[in-house]
Structures are given as C-alpha cells and as structure tokens.
Amino acid sequence: MVPEIGQQRFAEAQAAGALVVDVRNSGEYRAGHVPGARSAPLPNLPLMLSELPKDRPVYVICQSGGRSAQATSLLRDLGYDAHSVSGGTAAWIDAGRPAVTGDEPGALTAPATSEETR
Image (cartoon, rainbow, N blue to C red):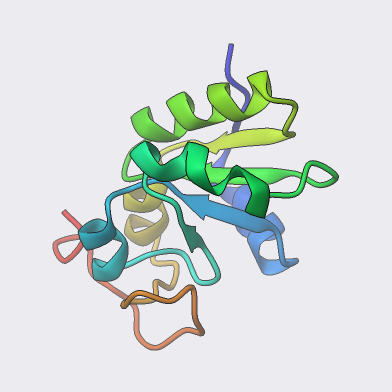
C-alpha cells in the first residue's frame, strides 16, 4: 500500500517548506502547479533520483493521484520516505489554494483555475 497524505496535511507540510515533486508532464506542470514543486515527469523520474534527498520526506503529486502513487511506490522501493498527495493538483486548485504557472517551481504569481490545468 502506498502511503497517502491528505490535502490539509499536505498544505501544512508545503507551507513549512516540504519537498514536493510533481510527476505530471511538462505541459501540465507549466499550466499550474503547487508553489515550490519540482517538475519530474514520471518517465524521467529515474534520471532525477540523485537530486532527491533520502533524509527527509518527499511529497509526490500529479493531477489526481494515479501517477503519484506509481512514483511513490518506486521511490519507497528505493529507500525514499515518499508520500503520494491524495487528490493531486486538481484537488489542490479546487480547494482554492494557490498555483504557479511556468517552468520553474517559483513564487506565487496567480492562482490557476481548474480549467487551465485539465
């Protein structure tokens, strides 16, 4: 079973500076992502493992939870303290939380709408 974190607990962790990895494709990421989330599309994730620390939790997010569950399972098999974000970016945005657009994890620019990220 892949450990999941609910949206409220994830929002608290994200606000405290948690490491967030977004495994959606680049276009989805550009359209709107959690502020501070690093882009690591699922097919490229194995190539980016050296950039992820094993000494702190890694929160994995996608659009709704399917790809993040796959990535979390892979990361946990490799010794990472990984957690899949329940409901994904869609639930984050639907809850009215801020999203960042563009290629960088970046600072908040403007909230994306759920229509922009689907």
